[in-house]
Structures are given as structure tokens and as C-alpha cells.
Image 1: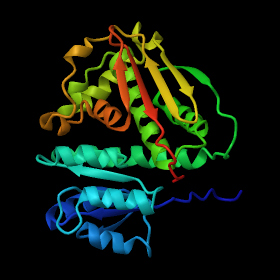
Image 2: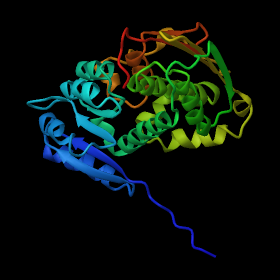
Image 3: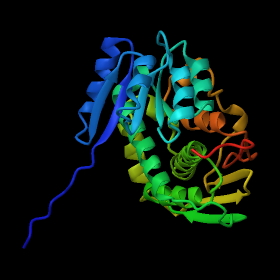
Length: 306
């Protein structure tokens, strides 16, 4: 019998930060992962000069840097390397810049205050969705479905194939928009499963999140939580996509949602999903019961394919 050989696919990540201590911390956290190869740049200008010779699979960048800061870097990457995802490192004082960078094409962010528990998870989320995007090959001028509908169990493993299928239905959209739409769907479905159906509080993620995941595992086996479903409806045209995600939980008061763009909230992991959705989408609406979110993305006119 021939031995089974496992081939480890290594991804290249470029870490950009002008602070050597932070650069070492970020590189150390990612470098501990066996499938991640880390490169470094001291600022955005150096990073942009490196890209033609060695294009990474993902960039992790600080926002506040001399010469070329994180926002200018994101704009340049969007223009010249539109398939290259960027994850931001946010800190107090960089909130407005982070919002602009997300609107200009960054894929996600990780607060500097919680890097040790959050960075690797965030990077893997973006890499996974980028891989689904690459797998969802599109054909120009193919028929665009008008509506699609799905019913999901509370299983995170179902989200990737769902996003891949929906991304395949957007042939005229740029890859960067398709990635951001995928990120919004991912965050909204996770919220529907964990906070809606399983009723696990997002506040648990801001402390020791072991209790957060313990409750998720427990409630996936308990009634009534485990019997609840997530409903996803998607409406398409070549100019817009509208996604509606509903859960069967008890809901919440949408008026009581903290402002996710407030500088205090940007630095928390809990609430990041809504922050990303609002940054990526043109319109976001909750129903009165608080168990349904509808978001719409308008495709920019004459946008080139990315």
C-alpha cells in the first residue's frame, strides 16, 4: 500500500507596519501557522514596490504609517491588484480611516487591542472566502438568476458553499465587490446562527471567548435552539444584489444596536459583523422583530472587472 502524502498549501502574507514591535507581533502570530509564509514591509511605499516581483495571497497592514498610509495602500491595491485581499489593523484614532479603507476595498480588520485572539481567525476567514471566490468561476454574459432561496441548519460548514453559489450568480461584478458581498453574507449568517437561533451573546467575544464557543456547542444540541433554521433569500440583477437573512430566534430591538462606527465599538470583536456589512453595502435594514436583516449593494456604473 502506498503511503498517503499530505501536501500543505502555503499562503504568502505580506505584513506592513512601520512600528518594528507591532510588525514583529503580527508576523509572529501569523508565522506560528504552518501554512503561512510571512513577508514584511516597513511602510506602504516599500510594500507597493515589492508587489510586482512577489505578489502575496493576502496583505495585513497598519493604517497609520508615513509616506504611504493604509488607506492609500488599499486604494493602490484595488487599482492594480484587484484580486488581492487586504486586512486592516485598527487602533484608537484610526476609526475614520478604517471606514474609508473598507469602502475602498479592504476585506476586513482586526483591532490591535485583541490581535492575539482575533488576527489569525480573521485572516483565515478572508483567505477561505477568497478561495471560494476563486472556485466560483463566472462566465461573462451568462444568464443571471432573478431570485434564489436557501434554508440552513446552524452549521458554519454550510456558509462557504452558500457564498460560492451566490458569487457564481454575479458574473458582471468585480472580484473585489464579490469578496465584500461574500464577507457581508458570512457575517450576517454567522450572526443569525449564533446570536439569533442559538441566542449566544456577542458580548462574550469581547472577553475570554471560550464561554462563547462553549455555549454554541451546547445549544447546537439543545431544543429549541437546534431546531431553528436560517433562511437566505437573494435577489439579483446585473446592477444590484439584495440579500435577506432571517433567523427563527426571539429577535432583539434594532433601535438598541450600538453604533458600530463609534471608535469604542470599532475596537471590539463583538459587533464587527454589522460594522463590515454597513461599510460594504449601500443599504442595510432590520425588521421590527430584530430577526431579519436585508442589505443591498448597487453595482458602480462601468466598473471594470477585478
